[in-house]
Image 1 (tube, rainbow, N blue to C red):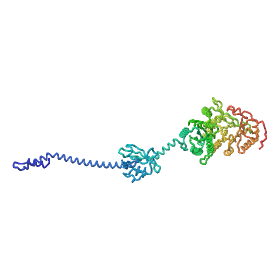
Image 2 (image 1 turned 180 degrees about the vertical axis):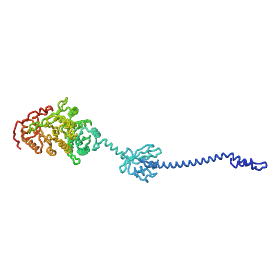
Image 3 (image 1 turned 90 degrees about the vertical axis):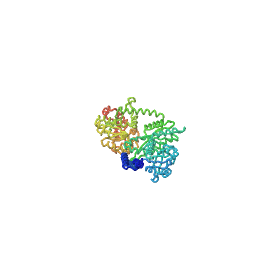
Image 4 (image 1 turned 30 degrees about the vertical axis):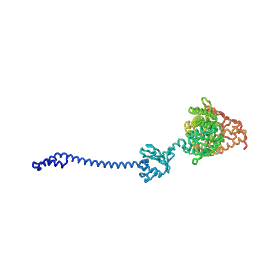
Length: 634
């Protein structure tokens, strides 16, 4: 009730009989009314106070929320502008509503370019690049309008920037037509992927197609071959390239392999397919030519190119190459068969002395199977030590006695019987077993020689591969130490091929051996191209004249004159001379007259087992039967 109405009500109730207002009664009514509502006033005051407190608290909360919102806004800006990816948001009208700093950086835009409301068309025009239309089939060269895009779809876009960067955009089209896009610089990832794809099909050292890619190319060439077309496959292998890695180091070997690849590439030309199959093996596929004439000419060209010295720093390296050739369709119409047959032909080229090419022939496969069987037996023989040494005397013509023995290996196979050295030594060199065999020969020869009289020496042949593929100095030292044999009683025989492999690497090893007191001999003197030049490169203790010079010295004046000249050469250089292949008393007598130092041959004795050495040493001196022979006319 309103206060006025309540008051008038109280006045009416206070009327006296005479119509006047009873003041005391009115006061009582007012006081009574106040007392009735006094508790309500207190409650109102308390509520007002509560409202004031809550209002104050609410203002504090609003202030805190406002500060928190400001902090979140700043945090959002920090996160947005420090994202590693670009971010852009466009509304349904394709106008920019939000972007970050990375977005500007990726596309080369300025801060003014990316103000709110900028259209996609304007931004595209200002970008320092263009969209890659080839990134995906059917991709548009302009940013696609969201009006025509499928709602809720995700599209990938790619941009080629003027500085060769590649930017990839992932655009999400929302249901209302607006879009959100993230943008990334994928240049390094793309380059890495391209590199991985390249390496999957190419050799990283030379850049040539690898074996996998080459097989694919051969497959394609055979599939597209016309009925009257011949396709030649050449399998190349660098002869004894492993020795270069062992002597000069893998880095030097890699440099030379790169040079080899360039020379083969130049010889093969762009019309042929070239590949590095692995290590020191290459292959060439020649199509669209008449065979075998064209591939023969190609092989000749490659051999000439690779015969020229290769340079590594101030060093020259000489190489040779062996090649196996198979021609489709006669030698195979499938990739595996053609590759296998070219490999078989290559093996025959290497077995025939290297430095040549061989065309595949059907009988080669059977021969190769026999060779593989022999190789397996030879490996088993190395493990089981199925070898023995025979010794052929070295006869001193001045002292008229045996002064030493040459150790000659023999292989006694349990099924094959006695296998001639000429059948297994070249194979052992080719497959790398000659190092183990040579180490065994050194140990056994030193052990046997230790049982002989003090003045009797032993000569051991050393292969070129032992210089390049093992620590020869250590092998010799260990063999001498195990047998307690004086180094002066050991003689190592090397051929010209040892020096031809790598003179600069071999000479330090020879000097180290010679400094220990070991004697060094040049074997098969006169059969090489540069024997005389090698005599001046190292102070050999002895030269051994090949038996091919001995056969006709009795009846042929020219042969006698050559022998005389070589003996004089050795004497002038301070080197002993041993003549091999002496088989008759007449030859012995003539060499006595020429004052030759030593002879070796069947006239003295064929090679005999170690157990017969004491008997050979007990035999009386050999007599040529002729005291004097006229000197050959010079």
